[in-house]
Amino acid sequence: MIGKKKIIIGILIIVCGIGFVSYKKIEGSKITVKTEKIRTGTLNQKIILEGTVVPEKQTSIFATVPIGVDRVLVTPGAIVKVGTPIFSFTGETKLEMEKQLEDLKVEVNTSEAVVSNLNREESNLNYESELLKQQLKVNKELLDQNAISSIEVFKSQTMANRVESNYQDIKAKKKIEEQKFKILLEKQKELKTKFTIVDNTFIAPIDGIITEIAVKDGNMINKGAKLFTISEEGNYRIKMEAPLHMVNILKAGDIAMVKDISNENSKIYSGKIKGVSSVARLDKKQERVIDVEVELNDSRGLNPGFLTQVELEAGESSNAKLVDSFSVVEENGEYFVFVVINNTAEKVPVKIGVKTISKYEILNLEEGTEIIVNPFKVKQGQKLRVENDSRDIFSN
Image 1 (cartoon, helix red, strand yellow):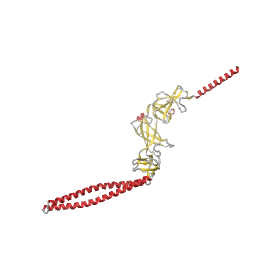
Image 2: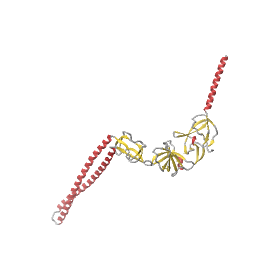
Image 3: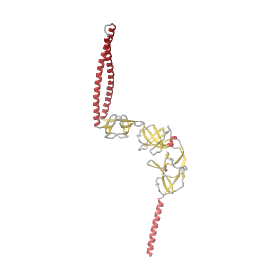
Image 4: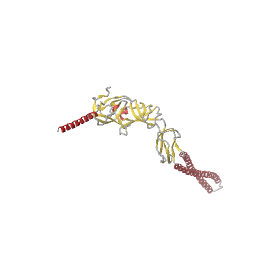
């Protein structure tokens, strides 16, 4: 009996020990955090937005004849010079253009023969018409002298009129045929030029950067289809989206400093705001934004499509609800803060307005909302121990 009591007591001790350890473990899983309150203030520091490099001017090249692309020889982003090969063409394309040239040659020769015949006919009718006019003049003089009858004059007049009418008809017909012949010659010249291109490779028409390739290896392209787009190298601007409420903050002429964040390029590009749209639109997140463009003093070294960080020396934004930038978490383009509810971390999405290096403007939370400071180790639903009562973010 005593042995059984010892066993029961031992089990109770073990269970209590396990419970105590578990409790300690749970207590130990809590992390200590600090909080701050969202406060209204004036944001008069430099504003930071993200922008994309876009060409100032782009030239799109279209197919002027149906073609078959054998190989695409460049990729978007390639820097090319005048004469750089862009495409090579299939043998079928060359054969098709050779057939077009041969058919056009027949049309040109036929049209040339028609014009030549009309020239001779016009010349003969003109000569005949002049003779008949002279004969009519003589006959009229003879009629005045009663040397011939009026019937003879009438016959002479009728013949002269008929030949003159034929002459004018031939002149008009020849003019039309000459226009047709001229058009055919221009078409033949243009097709010969195109054939010279297709017989080799399609080349870049200007120095620049290929911003788009609209075809792939082996594609058959219809006349008028886009082949590629090229922009002049180094002639770029920055396009940005800004929250709608910044429409009265940003203005044309404001200084802008641009940093390339697409690669390790640490160069800073200077410029200024070129324009601010006064009309809002919805972005991919269905939020209302305005378009802002920055022109650069020198954009060499950037490429179209590169992402940039744009620092703007804009006017101040008053009555902004602010938090420290390090209290906001960014994930896949979305922004979040953590609040404390019943000593538990709750992840809350937020909409960001103006951003500076040290402060973010919060658009969708009330002033006084308590958020966790520097919450990058905090997880959703995690138990917390708040070290202090909320501090004023402007107290330091």
